[in-house]
Length: 116
Length: 109
Image (cartoon, rainbow over all chains, first blue to last red; front, side):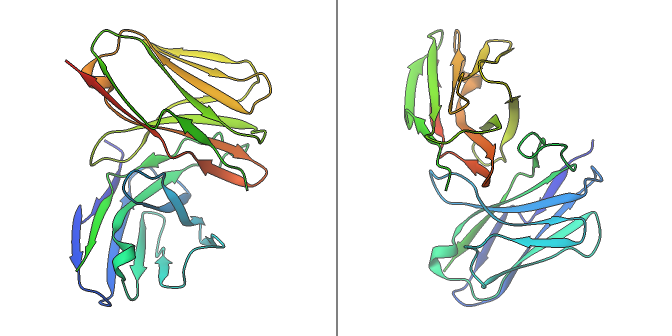
């Protein structure tokens, strides 16, 4: 089945130790997104790729970076994780919408990050 | 900044009861989506509404977009334990896409 896959499902890292989360998709969608979701809060968009074009949200800290080496894969790099970065990180994909807000986003199961 | 307020924040009811949850804003949205997120999983799209006053039904779920496109409601008839989850609304507008904080729904058997 076509899907969005995130690895690992759980990641433990140490304060300040760089960590990379990965996302892959078999949907062949041209748009990929990374969201941060903290407990009992809405997903917060960090950035997205429209094909190879990177679009950063204005309030996304510089500590968060992303790479998209090809259509299928996208990575989230946290250069120096702090305790406040502990959260669920969701990857999503979509086709290019005809009109903003009507595209269907397909989410992966998320990676839960714990920072010690 | 376009904000979406969802209410109630938490709701726990018995199986078989009906319920309505709300998504409200002072801003006009060109579209509004409802997602359901189960524990440990990513959100799954339930419906997209784009026309003021639009009503869509998905089995026991009825979605309505307000006439002024500032609010939406989700009504569940005869709730079942499988309906348990976090219900998120997301609006699309001039400022991009905005998620509400969600309604945590628990249906007790």
